[in-house]
Amino acid sequence: MKPGELDRRAKLHFARQAVLAQLTGLPSLVRAHLTSGPRTPALLTDREPPDTPLSRDVLELAASSYPEPLLGHCLRTWLWGDLLGARDGVVPDGELLYISALMHDLALTDRFRPDESVGCFAVHGSEVARTTLTSLGAGPSYADAVATAIALHMDIRPSGGPEARLLQAGAHLDVAGTRAADIPRDVIRSTVARYPRNGFPACFATAMRREAAERPNSRAALLWRLGMRLPMNHNPLDRNGS
Image (cartoon, rainbow, N blue to C red):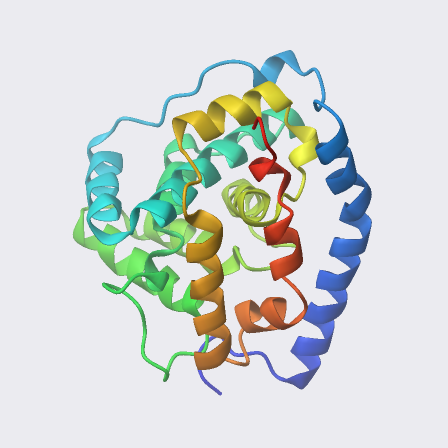
């Protein structure tokens, strides 16, 4: 099997998890469309990304690699993950979460996209991140932690540390609106104003359609076939007035 591919048993397990997550998340999705979200003072503070030599180097790499819609997605993913961590009482390594978010979709770009010998873009992207961070001077354990978070971000229930869980939560919120009801509407509005979603849904749909065609045994392909387009097309983040 190719790196990152799912066998039949793993597909069935993953599909069950995905369908269950969609069903259990429906009430929250409806609530996000109909309400202004929770009144959570801890989520109303401004957040600035870490400003370190490594984070600046990675931001420069991301800005030169992603099309604008995907770069915005990565920045929103970081902020959503950080906000959900504050809400849930999960304390990540702030720089590690930020860098993981900036690098998590590098394998969807023309610069780092794998050929068809690779079975999963997220697994390939994790190796790109590991190699890149090592070349930028990050230690092996740090590079491994980022790589693990990226490899797991397409999972339904990631088993890694706080950065992996928050990266997954932030990415799934931005793509499909998962847990949008846990973020106050005014925070959503300010986040989307700061990092606009212009062109993102169409850009990401194109990328997932391509992944499904080129890597049919991947998590991305299975999610696409299970109807990822529906929550993408009805993401409360794109609600008028967001």
